[in-house]
Image (cartoon, rainbow over all chains, first blue to last red; front, side, top):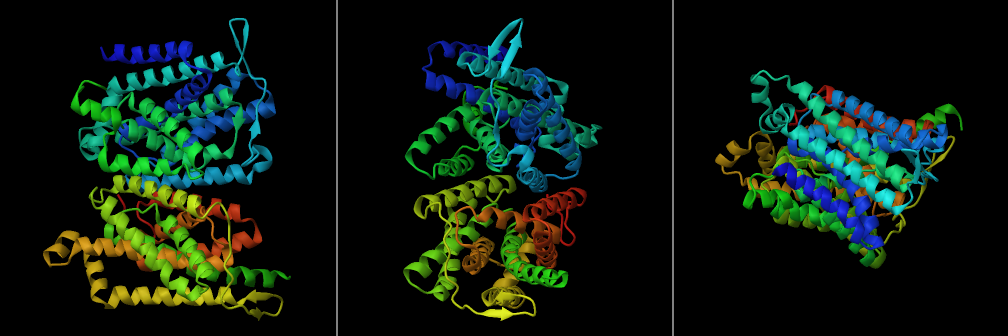
Length: 311
Length: 288
């Protein structure tokens, strides 16, 4: 039944493209890619109980890995995507190893510092990365079964975003139900006791950070391909705070939470940006309101009250 | 300029920078030591101090008045935030971090809406040049360093010699035992949060004539304070001072001789590695 619910949500997202007006069609494509990013973040926060403030470096590693290789080496879309994912995997594994012995606030500060160093490096090497300005990729095509699909086409964009999101959601679903996912939950609840029970806790932590970073990199790489842009904004601290906000608002430790959180926040930010220059104030206000009054998030609250079976 | 003059300039810039940085970081360290929380909004308090200084000295025409008003206003904002947000969530470490990130964006964006996206200077209240053999140096910067040093000593004395300082140190050592000995822990928390914000605000106010007031100026202050407080050990005031000098001087040196961005990359990587290897800093106690 639970798998059915999640497949139903994916089917609903697939069906929506037939009825949505162009603006919301484009918004939803973007939201699905960002929700995949939030889902990757949620694997670490919601299941392993580690709060990171540096996920932008994984997202950006995917983005630069894909964007730089396509821009400078002229590789194809699929190769570029894979190289971005590999870059993200390498950065995530390295960060996982460095942070192995830190917990709680120390983990958060170390990830923030590393991400800041990464961000500053994208500015420092601006002759290659384009720094703040970034660079645009043009004419990206996906060659699929003998057909040439331009990624700039809204329908192609939407469906690629859907496939990426679906893959991340199902991976999330599968990990959470697997024995390894159970051990991640045990890590969140009580790391000391998990270790006493004979589990190799550092290995599971490394696994959690790596997979979480990998999913973030997949999202970053897909974002670059679909929206044809690479820039250091996406490595900045705001893009580390966004997934935290999306996951918390939707419900940390729920599979659908990241999608719900991203959906609500993206529309909220969009509305606010048409009203005032200081539109990011909704980011701050939502963080404070969530932590004060709905610490379990939207889906977490629904689970606590009506649907205890929600994963 | 000769190499020696370059080095001397780097040393001078570094020392003044280190003193202001120590003042900012001391506020962060005080809050962590007493309340056991990481305050991500600390940079926003620094920025708010600078903005209030701009308003007061532009509208009322007195920089000295601004220097007094800024920490009071910012301290009051911090006290309100403590009562409305931090106390209700019981100072739980991770919730507090999320809440202070929220506070950071609320303050920063509110300033953007009211003050605007400008970088605006305040004229230094005193202007004179100090002539060294090969270059001239702004006298105001030397005064900034001096005032920061005086405030550091004053904070130190307040912590070591007054009853409030005793309460703070007691709360830092053991909150429950302190409460059992009738230390009003709740009020000590609020005071520490307000005082920490006030220290950041004074540092922000002192720096306006040199750096201009801008709504995004808090992030660098926050990151450098983090670097200092972690290298020095969270909650250790002596460590904070030592680390501020190490970071301030090396930052000054690398910035003058190489590039400011490179200096920041080196500092952040260094601190990440120190913290990763040792959960505690060079002095001080474990964070977790």
